[in-house]
Length: 110
Image (cartoon, rainbow, N blue to C red):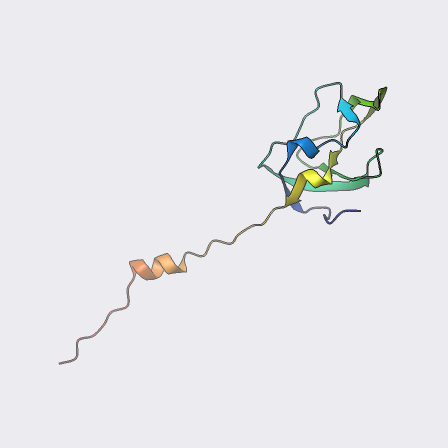
């Protein structure tokens, strides 16, 4: 399906890839923002081309009218997984700064 797992943090990287080719939202759905971190809550295959799609915790389920190859449909909002990448959390290590503030004492040798 896709390389994500439920509960994983992901970042929206591309708005153009949120909906599979051939799908045009008619209503104004809530959309992820590029650069924002989201939590995967469900992974599924989309109705168009069986593309990997995700739902995220931060955007609740809601239905939206879409045009699929000219036909008007009502469905759940899902997002193309290709529009996201895993979020990398970097651990901050401040030990180097602590060592600068507390330099070791050098004893003078007589």
